[in-house]
Image 1 (cartoon, rainbow, N blue to C red):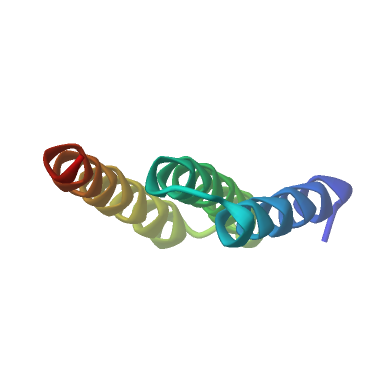
Image 2 (image 1 turned 30 degrees about the vertical axis):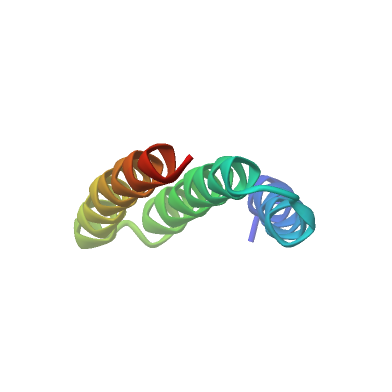
Length: 81
């Protein structure tokens, strides 16, 4: 694994801690969004290292699901406030 993957893993760990330590739901959504972006970057690095196109397709599918879920969560959170 190269150094970029370790940096992304460390940043994902920090984002996970941010989700746990957040005080309101908007901060949790921000941490969730940050964590998913880092995981997608890690998936793309992995797919480049193994030279598999299916892994990039999986990363794109995960990105679309993550963005959709984030929009739904933000919508219902704004309706509740």
